[in-house]
Length: 459
Image (cartoon, rainbow, N blue to C red):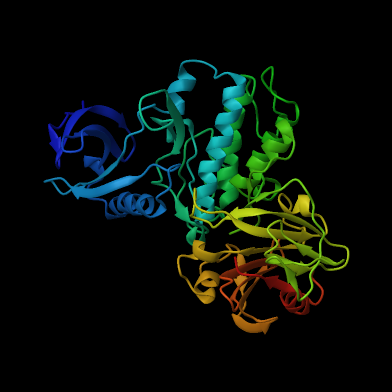
């Protein structure tokens, strides 16, 4: 029996929302703001375990730093008179996915849209180098918000919650305690020495997909997925790949799974996609542009000639290696959800497969501009580590009027060699960001040659 407190800090307690393994969650009321909040309190039986206490505090700090509307937000931290910490969070007034599934199957169309929203929320974590490790129906919440200013119907948003088991990718391998929700845990989570990365979350997302879209039959790992009536047949293959026993056989992250779901249900869309361990997100236009560059410009745009690609805004151009092709689009700097989208180019022998196959070579070029919040090229490159890869010394190079900071990574998996580069040009062009997966032969020469072919113009 849990005794309800009258107040926690300045909040009046109205009722119990839930009890977990390590904490209790209460519905509180902020009288000064006339608003409800969720207050998570460390369980009394764990209050003297310093490891659990620090994990509790780490979750609150992590949620504070993320500050994205698809992740539950933390307003404040506090401490009870008995010394137990508590965190004050936004209240998800729509309950959890676990609650809704307990009431019966969710309509197919709604379930498919819901799975995509969950992928988008987890993609935010992956963009920040975080793996959740416990993606289950109880950790997918819903909150209502006005669809527009003033009275009217309220729209609903999916929110990812409970990051108590989350780990930074830089520290997510080796001596990882077994943790997660049975039925949604990836097989490698049973091995304390296994690498836990984005693909661990992909497994949990795949199991959520099976629960939402699959027929209610018992299924062993790697068995075919039987779908509910009305679900496109190709979705079965997507969910089977997502829930593959071997991490290497799954999609690399939540954004890649989202992209695969889009292709399986309605063909390619202009959606955020991701590439590699800390890959940026980009929405690609449907058209493929193989344009051109000269040193001259017309009306603020680059002129065109064969062998050079120019983005749709005419502000970025790059000389294309033989046999490569280009796609144009816009992207949002990681962590800038809802912010401006910047012009970008993707060049590759197979641009469509770059989004889903880490073995495909290619390069992503964009103007990051104010999305970097004033960070220098060196600072931007330093913030882009790759789990499971060995970094090379950072070097500098000046190519075609741009001062580049270049960091290389040697990866043992299908990614092979990866290069991150950022630079600034003259004339107010802002910061230019490039990520390259070069061919194995003469990688350094290839990188310098490609960077020498990059041109940008001020807005």
